[in-house]
Amino acid sequence: MDKIELTEKQTQWLVRHFKHTKNADIAARLGICARTLSRIAKKLGLEKTPQFMRKCRAENRVKAVAAIAAEPPEKRQQRREQILRNGMKSRFKKGENRIWQLSAERQAEIQRKRAETW
Figure 1 (cartoon, rainbow, N blue to C red):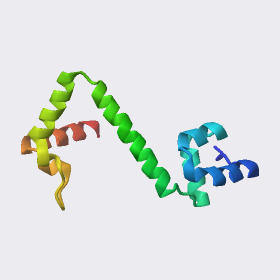
Figure 2: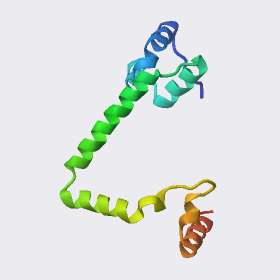
Figure 3: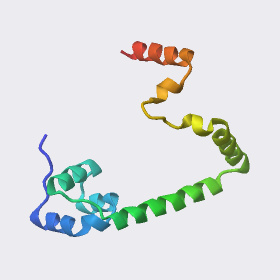
């Protein structure tokens, strides 16, 4: 399977707009998939600007807050209780892996399931 390559005009457009345009928008405009776009951008050494990344993170935070606010009150209460119940227990400590925080029985169950899929 041949890799998709862009025309000179498309490449010039990509270089001009990559830093401040979302990848989904670029991929749609160029008619390529997101993975192809990533491959081409890496080959050209293109990166997003820090300002653009901050803007995207802020937009995502706003969307997340709106999504949580749209949840029914009992779901929000469950989320609060889960955070209070788990608290720092869910945080990684230096040199720790998530599976190490599980009980021995749960670790054995995970290993059993892995062995079944192999």
